[in-house]
Every structure is written in structure tokens, then in C-alpha cells.
Image 1 (cartoon, rainbow, N blue to C red):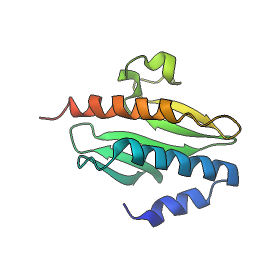
Image 2: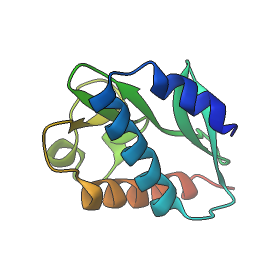
Image 3: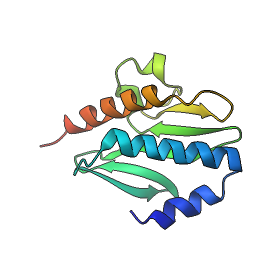
Image 4: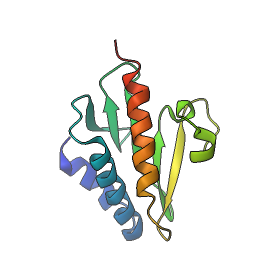
Length: 124
């Protein structure tokens, strides 16, 4: 994805939220590595990661007041979703990454790894 689309979205956030959004983006990139089945794009104007398989929308970043949401489109299907993520909808769940709290790098890595496995299981 063009870096400028992410940068444009992040530039609209308040300074604290912007810093957290960049940290989430970097954590996602680290967790995903060079996975050829995952691509960065924008969905509904938000930075997003898409898996090449069926039901490909994997996760996205959305700024809020005092925190940034890391949203998993199929979050309800992730292992232990109710203990790890917030939300009550049919499928979407999210992790709130608060600006004034410790950055949850390990939680993000685990969630992303589980999301990749979930999406890869739908291939073919």
C-alpha cells in the first residue's frame, strides 16, 4: 500500500493517538513479516490488512479519543475472543490500545498470529 494513505489518515489523529497508531502499524508489520497473502490497503478510509483468501478483511486501525482500536473483522472467531477482545457484534471485535497505558505488543502479536491462522484455514 502507498505509505501516503496511512500517513494521511494518521495525520488527522491527535498526537497521542497518532503515535499509538504508528506503533500498532509497526507491530502488525513485524507480526506479519513478508507474508505474501497479506496486503495493506484502506477500507472505509481506515488503514487495513487483507488476506488473499476467502473473507479476506483481516484487521484495521481506527483512531478514537484517548485510544486507538485494532479491529479484527472476524474477531469473534478468534480463540478466547471474549477474554482478549471487546465487542458484541456478529463478527467484529477490537482491542483498545490506550495512549496512557503500556503498549500491548505481545497481545497484538498473538492476536495477529491467530487471525492469520484463521484466515489461512479458509484458503482453497
